[in-house]
Image (cartoon, rainbow, N blue to C red; front, side, top):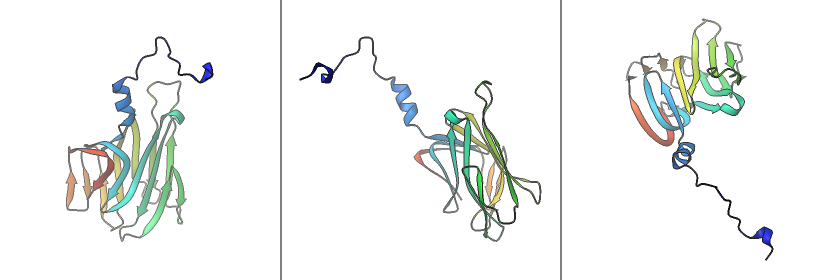
Amino acid sequence: MSESLAPQRTIGASAPDPAEAESSRQGLELLIGSNKFRNTNGVVRIQGKEQLFLESKPEQGLLLVTIDLYGNAGTHIGHLRRNVLVLNPTEQFSVDVHRADDSVTADLPWVRVTDQSTGQTVLEACVVAHKKIQVALGKFYSHKGMLVDITPHYCRIGSGTTLFGDVSENKGGTVVLG
């Protein structure tokens, strides 16, 4: 057997840090309004449909947002895929993307979707820490035509469901709203 194929032991090498290994397995923490959803896969299901997907790409200094946009009758009127509007037939929506600057320590990425007809923020999300994304503002419709209203204090779906200060462990799964 060749010496180069024999297992080598590196002097001074240590076993991987268990805390680091656990952290790498943990999913994203999503802060939606005042609610915490721990260990998620970044997908938000609203009224039974996966409507929002958030991804953090720290090596690129980016937050990536994918969202289906509906009108108040549940009609599909827009689609943002990884920060690019791929469906926007009436040019109703605009997107602002801020890429983090590596030279500035506290500079974090964010994405804002605006309804140009009203000037209202449809969705505003930002990275607040490693594997932690906050959706502080949102005002958009579900596929059933129900208003999803997100403020720093709550997340409300239609007139029936309001989440305020909830904490949920998602075990690597999807966030379910409504």
